[in-house]
Image (cartoon, rainbow, N blue to C red; front, side, top):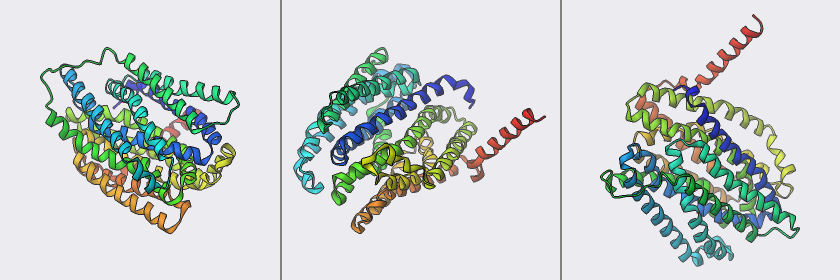
Length: 434
C-alpha cells in the first residue's frame, strides 16, 4: 500500500479532522459559558443521539460500504440501508421518549424531560447527514466530506459568536439552537453533494437476510463498544450528578482529539481493507494492519507521556470553571494508548468477523461498566475515566490477538515504525553530514 498514491485523499481527510480540532476551540468557549450543570444536561442529549447514530451506522449504513462495491447493486443496497436507518432511529427515539419519566427518576434529573423532547428533532435532523456521509466514505470523496463538515462546524461557529455578541446569558436552549441549526444545514448540503449517488430501486442484488447477517452483529458490537464512550454519562449522572457530567464531558472534549485522529485512520483503512480481503491480498493486509498500529502508536505514546507529566493542566487556563477536568483528562489519556490496537476491529470487519467483534465488545463493555459502577459506589469521582480505559485496553488486545492469528504476523512488527523512523533519521544525517 503506497501512501503516495493516496496523498489527495489523505490530505482532505486530515483537513477534515482539523475542522474537528478547530471547532473544539469554539466548543470550549460554549462549555465555559454554559457552566457544568447546563453543559451536563446538554451532554445527556448529545450522548443519546450520538449513541443512536453509532448503532444505526453499524447495523444499517456500514453495508453501504460492504455491499456497495458493485455499481449495479447500489440502488437496492441504498433502499435497505435507508429503511433500516430510519426504522432503528425511530424505534430508539420513541422508546426514550416513552420512558422519560422512569429515566428521570433513575438519573435523579427532573429536567431529563427536556432532553427526551429534544431528542426526536435532533435525530430527525441527523438522519440525512449520516446516510449521505456513508456514500462519501464509500467512494473516498474526502473533499466533499470536508465541505459537509465545514458547513456543520462553520454554521455553528457563526451562530455561537452571534449569540455571544448579544451579551445575554448563554443557556441550554442556546446550545440546542446552535447544534440543531448546524445539523440541519449540514444534512441539506450532504444531500446536495451526493444527489447523483442517491439512487434507489428494487434491482436484483443483495438479499435482506444477507445484509442483516452482516449488519446485526456489527450493530450489537458498535452499540456495546460505544456504551462506555457515549452512555457512561448516564451512570455518572446517577452517581455523581449533572455538574460532574459536565466537568467529565469537558475532559472528554479534549480526549476527542485522539478519537478524531483514529477516526481518520479508520476511514483510510476501512475501504482499503475491504478491497484487500475481497482480492485475497493477504500480504498487503498484513502490511496495512501492522503499519496502521505502529505509525499511530508512536505519537500516541509521546503525547500521553507529556499529559502525564502535567501538560493537561492547560485545561485550567482554557476553562477556568472546569478545573477538575484536568484529573479526568489525565486518566482518560491512558485509554488512548490502546486505540492503535483497536484499529484491528476494522480489519476484522472487512473479513466479515462481526460476531467475534460482538464477543470482544461485550467482554470489554461489561468490564467497563463493572469498573465504572464500582467507582461510583466507592465514591471515587476523580477516577471515573477508568471505565473507558478498561474498555479500550480489553477490546484492543483481543482484536490484535485475533487478527495476528488470522493473518500471521510477529508481535515485533507492531513496533516497525521505530525502525522506520530510525532509518529515516540516519538517512537525514547522511545527507546533512556526508
